[in-house]
Image (cartoon, rainbow, N blue to C red; front, side, top):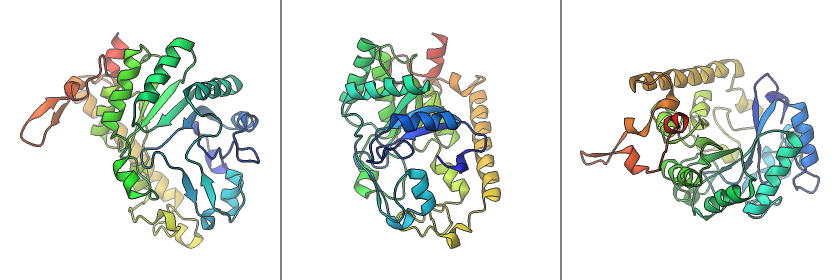
Length: 318
């Protein structure tokens, strides 16, 4: 958390493997620091990040040149030293211990606690659903990040080939929770190239209650996808700590552009929903979509992404 987050907006605080912001001196998770953070800031939910679609299975590295005194203060690390985010959490090691951690955090903060993850092997999700049914413990929301998730600093083998694309990954996970009777207990969030209205609408028809937008907002901010994020020499000032290059990002001008993008996305979502003869995007069903096969044919989306009872309209009318 930084002073830049304290301008009136509600926040979702993400807990990554580096535990920045809720980190003990030895780098492990500190519940006490998290509680203190929640008490002092407008945080409305907590999201435990298990993996991200752009590079699931590996951690992250912030080069020493990017660890400025400001970044070091915010993250709780030493300035001028390379900052490593591990590939796994040290606070838990399996589904059972993860749920213990979720319940502990929820009890201490009073906030909803969810998880964010890419999708690969489905055993984790099946075990999570089983444990939620049997023990009564569980997460409040699930964010599914598709393999299309973007970053300027990931090995190409991971960014291009690891983790299922969003539509496949989400439909499989949503199906697991639906079969377990948990789909109405959990809020589902979609992430990965969903910042265009038609993609966002399909995600909501598949069962998403919310969507995350990252790449598209970043493009509105001025990103030109120069793929220099890891060098600290972003030519537009978006991903750099260089004061000279950062001059290219005027917060007042760019804020208006991002606001216009978000407003436009909402407007187009509503227009598409109205075109489907419903008043809200959450009421659109998969029956309004067909998937083109590239050979002058198509299949109903409900067959391609077969999930019994999938979609918000069915969930809300049932």
